[in-house]
Image 1 (tube, one colour):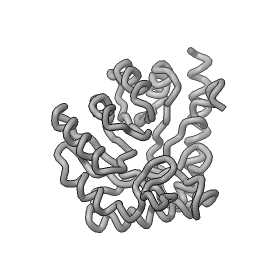
Image 2 (cartoon, rainbow, N blue to C red; image 1 turned 180 degrees about the horizontal axis):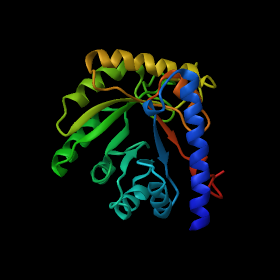
Image 3 (cartoon, helix red, strand yellow; image 1 turned 45 degrees about the horizontal axis):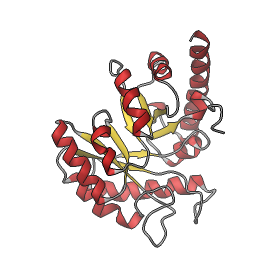
Image 4 (cartoon, rainbow, N blue to C red; image 1 turned 90 degrees about the horizontal axis):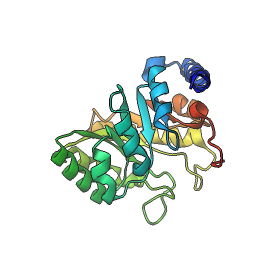
Length: 239
């Protein structure tokens, strides 16, 4: 456990250094960017170590992994983010522990989240996942709502009991006009955020950037970066 703590502390320090340098290069204050550590596939013991190292935001993308981990770490001062594609039959479980769902991308999911949040007596923050690679179907390869659908979905979230519209999230596209152009993709997300805030001023979160491209996200203006591998390492067998 001591070795693992040393490893995580060193990795976390490197990521903090990268975020700090990116903020300095962009003329931003370090406090403007929140680090979310994505702990998927890693055990609750790692979450506990990270909390002891000062991490306050953790993320998961699969409910079957997240629910038991969140329960085991319920005594820790953590905010839990759900960042994966969310099926409506998992919403009740996710609402039980998630402070913020970053992958809201369709009306039916909003309805389910609102219903379960009210039932649980909780307020759940919601980020709209934007698909910058959306095709004719209006959805991206990894989910998300097309830019043209943001306004309607945002209004629905804002008007739904138990939900709070937090802002926007994206994953750098693997195809389409933004493939391999992370900085441009994140700048496009910032433009969409500016449009959103005209109608919903409090929806000022912009979640973008991961281990490989956090600098581009910070340069574009992201308020939150989601980092997994750079902090926790590559889990054997996962590539």
